[in-house]
Length: 475
Image (cartoon, rainbow, N blue to C red; front, side):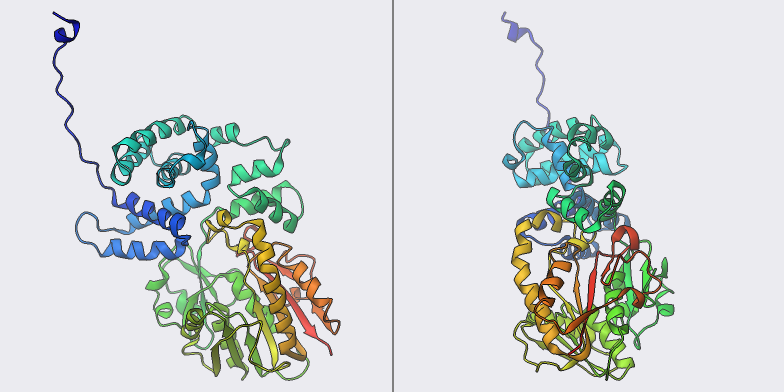
């Protein structure tokens, strides 16, 4: 009798259907949309969550499911660079040769293992089940093998292995530890100045979930009304700001649904307030928001203008974004106008306005808390692409303001190539101008820099890294 025939017969294991986990499937779908369509998570995730809440049966989401899905998506995107370095150490091929859907599942698993309190066994098994559902059994085995290697160390242990020592390569060390591209680390460090502590605080702040901040639009809502909401507290700096400290769903706030209040970072509010408070020589009747989409600053400026009897013109090049501006301004207590126009070829006459805000298109490096995926999409060459437009829009702003009036040049980026370099270059062509010290206009806000311009920071002010330079026409 052969050796094989003496072995007892073992029946094959019955096939087990993969267990569908609605939370992790939704998180995977959101990551795929971000990767495949260059979508932004803050635009993709809300409709996915809304659809999940509307389902009946076992796949219907409750608040805890929505919170976990949100954490999985944003946590994975924020720490993507770190997790890529860890996963690269656990696979036998370059990451670029790993299929993107497989890498998304691995990244979700790595975040559960290294960035949450989910038990190791649960994190691995849930990720393998997700892989079986969305990738198939064959690739699920690969996911299982890789994540078991990832689970052998905690995050600190992995960082010791995959991050170069700070003393040998400080920028690359910070890039891996804090999950930012190296060029972004370098640019932010240049803008911030100072030593290691400041840049580490900034990079870590970029990886924290930002609070939802509301703005009570003057004449339409009050902060007292918004403070009646659950877990609502006053803003730190803006008199119109209210923070929802436990996340909160802005759409559940009546004033937001009615357009009397909006979602607006406090840094954005401060830019509008500083321009509105800047001293003028002469009348104060006509205001311009020259890059008004999607309308947050325009709505606040429109309300402030109405209090003084001034009129706001809000201009936005893209018609669909001009529609968003019109929606934000609908119900403004004073007169206003919204137009779709190219700010580099304005339809209004020169010298028309007393106050002009030009919040120019930029890399968005100041809002990496809210759009963590942007750090992986942007490239240094994007700065060169934005530069001509930023300079052209600032020239339009200076041409559009009357003598004695004030221009506010703003970006949601602290990169020096998008802030001080633009202002310095353009003002060489406009000798009849002067910089206005913006810092006294925000008297309760500390650490605004050396002036006369303003730079806000997530780690210092809890805001996006907004930049503002105020310029007065003198002749």
